[in-house]
Image (cartoon, rainbow over all chains, first blue to last red):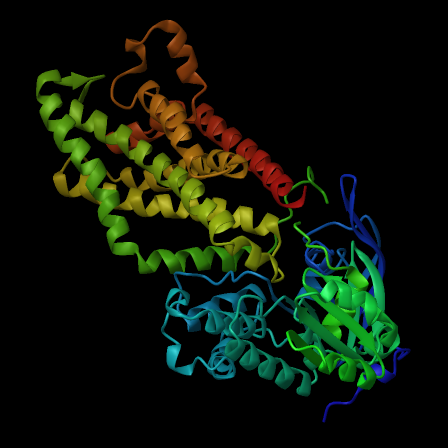
Length: 315
Length: 259
């Protein structure tokens, strides 16, 4: 059984800890005073727009980018000083697949296991299990070039498990996958959490964060701007419901109906009403014929957009 | 990050060498055929064709003179090619290095592994050509076997120099310049096809600082069945290029990754 550790935020021994982390490339501050902890068995999500500092943070955790300030500690081992020991107990899935194109699926796992110093006998024992976990038993002799995007990602995940890590660092593990492949991936990650593994997950899919993460950190411009459980964050920052209205004359409507809602946002030809009592506004909108109205509960995406804004991030 | 620190190589380099060996094994047959075909064509065309007109060079039948020189060239080119095109593919295109660094293997281990591997791979070429020389009867001297470790040093030297340019590369095109502007002229200046003494004096001086000149000076006597008269200077020059190249390559590669 998975214990909802999220409620014990002050537990004594986190498996992973970042304190006051800071990184700048030239004048550009990428990570700014970031602190976080991961408890054993917990899935911590880091969400944020492109360029928020997610990938840089993960690369610092792996000793691939130097720290300009602060501390990182995995299993009590300081990083980067003892990163080699720490990495033996970590598994990594990066944003872009880096599978070996010349090797079969089985060989990819075998060769990667050797980098961790895992004994050959143990590797051979794990390969069939990991191929099964990745739902690739029948493709053991296939090369990555013959696999679909989802299969490649699952093989990358399987490869990250070859050293039986306690902590997984997953950088946008489902970006670029179709819905079916994403759901398979989520199911596998849930299985890993059930086995007691800890996960640090970066994503910009809010449904992914909501489904998998015990706790979330919202990152923007390298700074932590919110932290909490997915539900807790929504309750703390948002009204209960959202009504989206799209169609002719919505701009006038936004002004005339604003008093029904706690907060109104206009984006292009769509108006978002954030409110806790949707009844009266829905009734008022019922009279308008040529509008499309969508009523739904507020979700993480609303939270994300509220906290980080709606402008497009190019970097 | 310790950009200028001494190399910190651990046991972690060995699985990286094994990885490259495993890939090579899959492509071994076409690779070895290519390795033999090219020098064989040169030997037949120039050795027998041109050689019949030239007669003896520095007291040797031209084909023996040419074969011993082009053995060193093939070794140098094989190591260079591996440390440029293949290493670059692994470093930049396939992101193999990056995935290895996510495991407990550091960049220093990887660069050392690539150096060692390129030298090992040049040995496959060397062994194939030595076999051809033996079969054609160009040389059947026991000292040929001593040429193997000597050429391994040559492979290391040229791999180390090539890794410097690998660290600086922004694309494959860059390597074309390296081959046309560095390797090809060096081949003509190093006493491979004709004695260095045939050239103008300034070029003779230039030849003395080229690593390939010293590689040829070591290898040629061994193919003929003699010991190099003064082996220590060429060995020292090759070692200096290997060590210097390796250190510069390592620093530049660290800068590329950790800057």
